[in-house]
Image 1 (tube, rainbow, N blue to C red):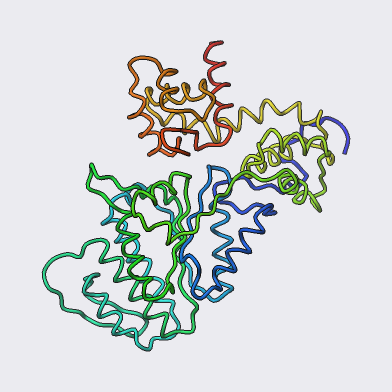
Image 2 (cartoon, one colour):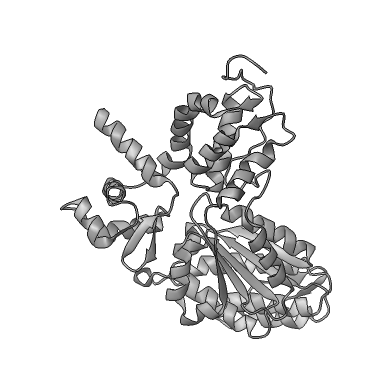
Length: 402
């Protein structure tokens, strides 16, 4: 194809890239090792560590990785159930209700029913429904007065599911909880969702880890686990998902183009990899934008340069702007102070950059709750969004000009 690089809309050439929240990319690059380790973990009886905690910044592909683990677990004979957690699950009672529902859904999928009745009867003392049913098998338990504590309700569900699995030909059940960094214990509000979950899970897994959990979220999750229970480090393997190495990042761009009728020059691929920092979402966004806006079968660095400014503006609107605008004015001031401090910075440095009248410690806690900031080490803070500092610089420059 010759002529102007600006494509007519709709673009007649296929766009192989799929940027989105949790959308599987056309080619999953750079995650082979962690997926192979997940497959080994699913076959271990018993495993060295019964559960996994997957952490990474926004845009690193945590949710996509979770979906890949689901597919491989199902092929290996596991029952799986994914749940995206929300703010309501910060309350341990609401979390318990959700996990009881999830365990009931998994119980309904267990193939064999021998021995389930006793497990349901034991678990029903805590779950307290009017009727507990699995397939054609059901019981109508009688209860004493009172309501089960959230940890007891979760334990009863895990125990009932474990007993059902023991009587089946299924290898086990895997609960995968995304956005799990929201499960931070909060003593001021008397909410202990993560402590309750760990207590129930640890108690149930002493019978054997037929029921396992994968928690996935922002890096704050690791610190939350350590704070919730001192023994959490013996329950979870921590997997950190980061940006892709150079060769894998290049493959994430080049491989989807094969067979699409398009190609990017090596110079352009190298530029996209460098500009994106190797983060999967940004690689997908840049590839998709180039294919959407440039009407050439072979796109070079100079062609991309004509649309790059528009792409950055579109990316700011699609990924950064709403998150920044969702912060309160004092929190926005703290984010800008962190950018001036170089991104990752100590509380002392951020306080100095923010200036008088800003309570940095309180504001940073709120930003952590909103998923904009995390603590990589004690009294040190960093952005939870890759490339966020660049966006804040561009925003500050536009504000100064206006």
